Amino acid sequence: MAGSPALAVVMIGIALGQIPPESRTAEMPDGWLVLYNANVPDSVAWAQWYAAERGIPSEQLLGLYTSPNENLPDKATAEAEIFAPVRNFLANSTIGPRIMGIVAGYAIPGYFGTGDYGVGGYSVACALQDTTDTTFNVNPDYPHRWGDVLPAQRLTRATMTAGHYMVARIDAGSLSQAKAITLRAKEIWALRTPMFGNYVYYDYTDAQKGTWSTLMQTVQNPLLAGLPWQAFDEDTAQTPLDAFRIGWHDVKNWNDARLRGSPAGPRILAYDYNSWGATTVRSTTLDGGRFVPNAIDAGYAAAIGATAEPKTASAPYPDTLLAGLMAGWTLGECFYLANPYDDFMWEVVGDPFLRVPDWALGPLKSSADLDNDGDVDLGDFLSFSACVSGSNRPPMPGCASRDLDRDGDVDAADFNLLQSCYNGPNRPPAPTCPV
Image (tube, rainbow, N blue to C red; front, top):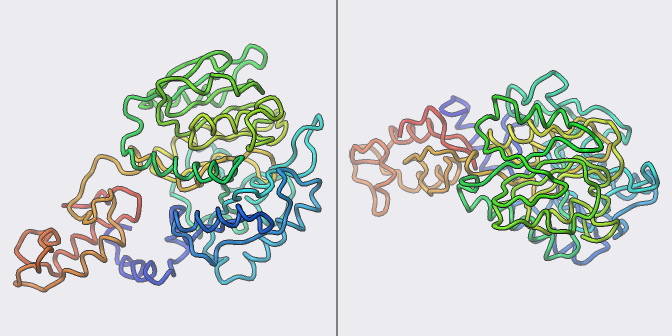
């Protein structure tokens, strides 16, 4: 969109909160609905805190009167207490058309019904991906269905299938632990170069289950050849200096030392292709020590797991996850694109706004980034507009940096340069940026 004729319209839309669907992407706070448990005071407190942390409008906090337990007994209960209220909000609210994602927040139940072997059940978060029903279906937007790692263009609300949403779960054993998930994501962003000197650990072989072919193909994919890959044995090995940790197929005893290697890396994402990894996300010892709560407890900002036994159904594609993050996209959209099924059992526990700054910001520094936050967005336009003095007039005090063409004034020519650099929040300046 950099330098396009539509930029002025989009900028006005940003200011008014009326961004058109074709320009709406996942990092925009007013594109997310936050669910909290109205029966749990700490959940109410979390929702208010989270909205303030992420700039989400208060009218996009939806309180649900549901159980504080991690599981609901059946689909009918989940429909009455969660899915129907969410569906009605999205259908009847003027806010609904702009929503791209849903955060299933602290103390919202994690699954419903009973899974195979009597353990776990169907993921509430995964069911919220498709609000049209609760029937197991293929995610119509996942690119591997067409043989692609990523879609040709980044998803917008206009290109995303109607009735479908990016969904992330933020839940833990306590209010402070739930807050820590978001604070960890923000800390990773503040590091600016968390990938430097750290590794992407992988283990695609298992003595009992054989080879996880999609992870093997991910490691061998030329598109991802630049990643700092490091093989390990997830059954026994720790992963020091860990940025990502992806393996299979150990099911329990994750409360041991394996996830807690030293020295710790930035611990961005942990993902294990196993059974029942997220039957609880609130206890590190319940059910024998499941993967997801222990990964979060070990300091990972996000973790992926299943709320039941997925059997041979495809798990989220690790190449899509990594390639999307390398494109500078958010965790929320990367998981959505990687997850091949709606209304199933795979979910991500983590802040959907998490991004990897090495990839999202890139090395380019532009003088049009007036607030020095790594992007050229509305904040820079507002900063610029306060300094416009017109042609052949010296810049006002404190405004010299807005003279982008260095001709001694702040005028329309400087605005044109700023426009050519615009690329939106949390993204590097546009490739066409000349300054």
